[in-house]
Image (cartoon, rainbow, N blue to C red):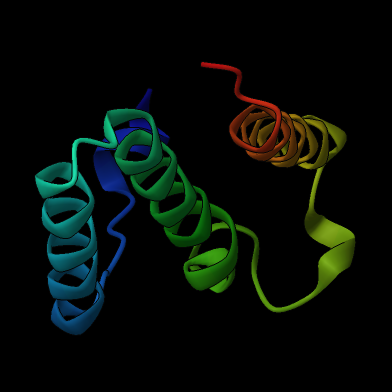
Length: 90
């Protein structure tokens, strides 16, 4: 629990602005599921790619299997969501 209390992650304001603009634009067109997917992708990017050095250091050898599997399941969710968007039947 101490890890969560002491770790500080940074997110650039430009990326937060981009997320807000994309989400708002997509929500204006009534695509709620797409807005959720966009938010999920940003969260996945910030947590595992952008702040990787803060969490595990600069070497890939320090990544444990749980983080790799969790990130892999995140990518699988994104792929399944995209397939669901393409195969959507009215």
